[in-house]
Image 1: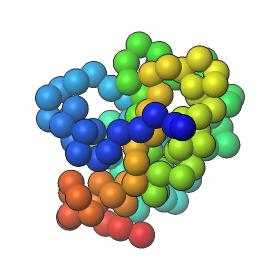
Image 2: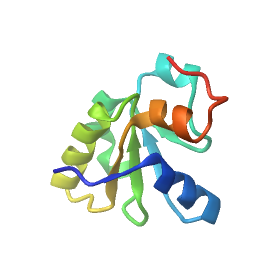
Image 3: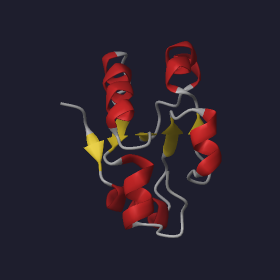
Image 4: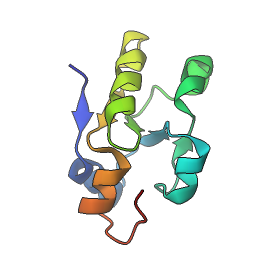
Length: 106
């Protein structure tokens, strides 16, 4: 089972100033519609090539549209030694519905 956080937990981390990185693995056209500020955007297919650039010293919250692709990438990252990787359950769609209702949805 993939380790995950819900959007409320991420919102609390952001409010508290808890160190973390949001890794947005959506495609460029998806990110253009909506995104979280200060996210690191790396399309899913580029993640394996970018392992050496991803942080290991703070929580790495992996985000996609609904949480399916990010769950796969979180599993991949954990398999490759990223014990700090967490899937954002529900993805940016859940964030828009539950945390930021003004955020555009697609």
